[in-house]
Image (cartoon, rainbow, N blue to C red; front, top):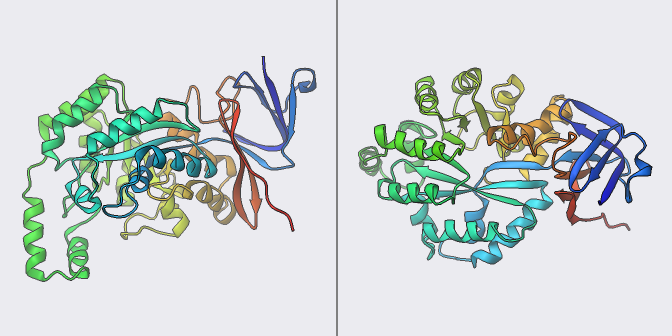
Length: 389
């Protein structure tokens, strides 16, 4: 029976901070945390944290990083195996111990832009296969299905039924709703050199496309629920849309575009996820909901990295240091709440006795958090030290 004591730490539990605390780990699980009674009699090894923070590992339920790692530039395909391994190392260094790789399907605009030689099915199957091998961190698949992708509907159902999917989200990038209302879409089209007539033509083309909706959409959500998968909606922009999604069984509201929608979804008991990059940068790229404001109001309870994996840890400490949020509440946004949303909270997401020891040691360097140790199931996956001069 292997045991480890991490001592002299600021241990962040779901309910507070234990200064000068310890975490006792036994066979990959947390035995005690905070004030550990008589640990010396049991621990094989003692790691002095030197006053650093000990946090639960970050659980990122939405990141587009895998597609960007495989195709970093249009047409520049990187071998999927190498991309997967390198991204694992990057994410581990950012404190992410469980990741749901958000892979799109049916999103013609994204496929056209990437100009990848890989088919979407190849991407899903390769990532799933690599995730099933020995890995640095815990890898899962979040399938983002574009509702205008009618031709990919059956493929989506097949991937769900064959066990390639751990989280499903439904998204709709049709202009005039969601993330881009007509004014924002017009502004975008004109900014890339299109004329007013070309904007009107493109708007008519996109809004006139067939979509997966009604009974088809209900069947898709039901297929995911039959496999007990969590389901998210994406870019919700109205109370009516939240009601429609909740009625189908959707339990996560991702990236609501305004405060009214975020408040409403949260009030109904849904998990509401926002982008940590929004907090780190100080606002939305597209002029939508300010996630800092939404988090502080309690309308958003999950932070995900979206397009920048390092954003979660930095945003947690920014909320604490600059906005006065209690550190454990900020940490819960990145750990316990996402674990709850995807049904992992009985095993992961917090430093509590009986849970798996997915842990981070985090030091503050020049005012910024730096992960020096990342532990998965009681083993150190990554360790680093600062250089001295």
